[in-house]
Amino acid sequence: MRTRGVLPGFGLTMGYTSFYLGVLVLIPLSALFFKAGSMGPAEFWRVVTHPRTFAAYRLTFGASALAACINAVMGFLLAWVLVRYRFFGKSIVDAIVDLPFALPTAVAGIAMTTAYAETGWLGAPLAKLGVKVAFAPLGIVVVLTFVGLPFVVRTVQPVLEELDPDLEEAAAVLGATRWQAFRHVVLPALVPPLLTGFTLAFARAVGEYGSVVFISGNMPMKTEIAPLLIVTKLEQYDYAGATAIAVMLLATSFAILLAINALGRWSRRSHA
Amino acid sequence: MSAALPPIRSVESRRLAGVASERPWVRWLLTGAALAFVAAFLLVPLALVFFEAFAKGPAAYLAAIADDEAFSAIRLTLLIAVIVVPLNFTFGVAAAWLLARYDFFGKSLLLALIDLPFSVSPVISGLIFVLLFGAQGWFGPFLSDHGISIIFAVPGIVLATTFVTFPLVAREVLAVMQAQGGAEEEAAFMLGASGWQILWHVTLPKIRWGVLYGVILCNARAMGEFGAVSVVSGHVRGQTNTMPLEVEILYNEYRFVGAFAVASLLTLLAVATLVLKKVVERAVGRQRREAPIAGDRIAFALPAEEAGGGQ
Image (cartoon, rainbow over all chains, first blue to last red; front, side, top):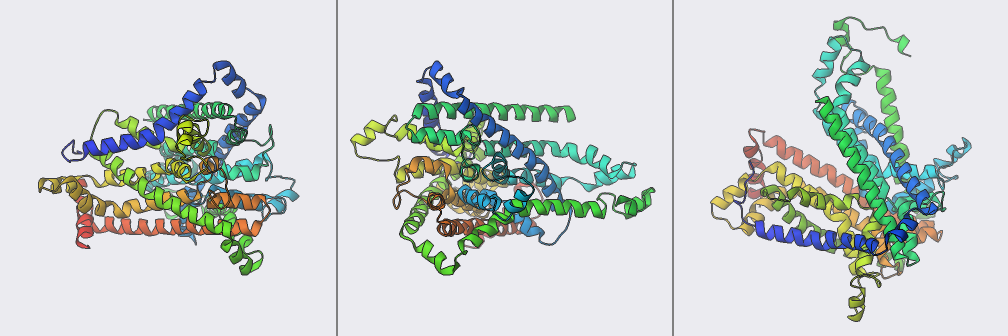
């Protein structure tokens, strides 16, 4: 269907694209791996298995997974409400869902910290219930939920819009309850976009730095995330240490993303 | 609560009750839960930025923005955006032209490379440029011999910001060009137009609405980038501090009005970006409605003609 080489400009666009990607992505990223390779395996292993590093990894991946789960559930609900129901202010809610894409993370960080601090608008009532959000691991989950919020909504929403309500009606006519129709007709169609949204939200959360540094309190072993540890090492001019932590963070998150993608392909095949 | 509603058994009464929807109380409950989530996670931070910025009155707000350091941060941030956005737009158009119009070996690898910055932590995006151009980096000795500074200077901020934001435009341009197809470009080529003429008179007018959001979002992200920039900037006040870094410094010095005043400008930018997204969506939707889908080739020919005729 698409033209193959009819239009002019292949050589130029190929050259320009390769040059841009080479200079901006390939060379800099290879610098990361060369630096890590120059450390020697023993030194590399010592840095990445240090208890403080290990605690940072656990917190980063744990909080990111939890935030992505919250987003999978609440993002799905939000997409459902936006597609299926009518209510006052719907188009404003639909627009504001993209706020985390456009709002700088530092701004989100100071605003969320102020809101969820013990004297804040939301933090004060929560503190009365004995829940500490800001300067605790829970605060990290809250901001990571914020940064990943649009992904699930924006992947599920278009699929849900395309889903024909006739199918659900047919299920109901054939005697299915509303819950059965949802469980067996709607949900299977939405599993692939849900998984995609979850993956994107998770990937975004793992790397997040700007909003977390304000709310977490940054205590080593307790509320210190891996990206912050990289910055700390850099500030001490420990470039090798920073690189080792970065390589491990990248490798682990790619492995997890590949696993989730494989899971998605497997679930699609078993449903088809 | 469900006991209050009469049980629906027959097929006819189910249809009357709207079988493809939930009972009213369920709908209210779900809508309420979704809106509470939106309020707690999106509305509260949004409102709070302005509340805190004006906590000591409009005079304190204006003074905080007119502050010398804040002002130089604003100027630097604008400069970065003015450099980065056109760079990324040019790359986006070139990459999309390549990926949407030709089939070649290694295409999916190229696509994966374009997506890569999405899954790299901003901190690591900054770190890779420090490893290249920093004092201990590959090119560090060469650069210092020639008196060029990249890290802890403006070029480093530009590089890191470009890295973080280029997929935003490239992805958007590619999606639009793939959806619109290349029929008009082929026609122009058959009629004897050169590559540059096709680009200037056919492709760019055709994609301008579709890519506007990508460009605007890239702009917002370029001005708001924090992690990558904070690694390469060196935080020299009045020189290499962008607006987000200024927000951080003011906040850590407990100058909350100042921090939230600068933050409020970035928030306004974010809100303007969201409003513009809605406007673009409406414009694109109108274009599509006016061009009924008759076949994938003809479908987008009409808006292109309309766009060309409007000039």
